[in-house]
Length: 257
View (cartoon, rainbow, N blue to C red):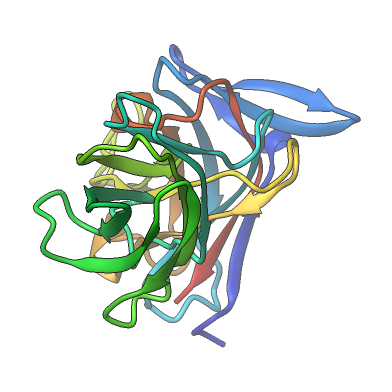
């Protein structure tokens, strides 16, 4: 036992609400979920005992979640609405800034050149394309990023720059060890670890994301310890392309790395 083992599964019906700013227990088609707001950072807690087959590795906390919207692409900086029909294939955490990219559009005599970067300083090129204006320009991966796509450029386009990316949420998670040195009248959680995530391609379709912890980031819990897991939708953690509306957790898996 050890690497890759599922340690625990946490469900909405077993969750413990916070005194304030708690996720709301609800149901869709008799599926229980915990709904988290988009303007206030709301949280949920679970209490458990770390199983005997835990082998002292790192931990994955894997929420299965859904929402009432689907994955959509939004841009900033295109003041004249010259760019449209953006499409991306295989945008990931590794080739973007948490599902956000930075673009330049440079116009020639009758051409347009698009460059897409992973970072705001525009030093990490991940895709580019060039073609005639008033056409759809293919974007090809650069520097083995794996990112490709396309965009339509209007005839009247001008030199511009901005951001492009998916609507997204930020999930935080943290652990609290409950042992003889802890008074349970106050909190003693480890530092939050985080992940940005985007919804599925259809409304109310579940998707998963992974919050990663090293062994040193789980508050010292070990085999047989009682502990709490806290999961938060960090509403303030997304300022560009925030997913509007509730995000709902259906279950959380705790897996050893």
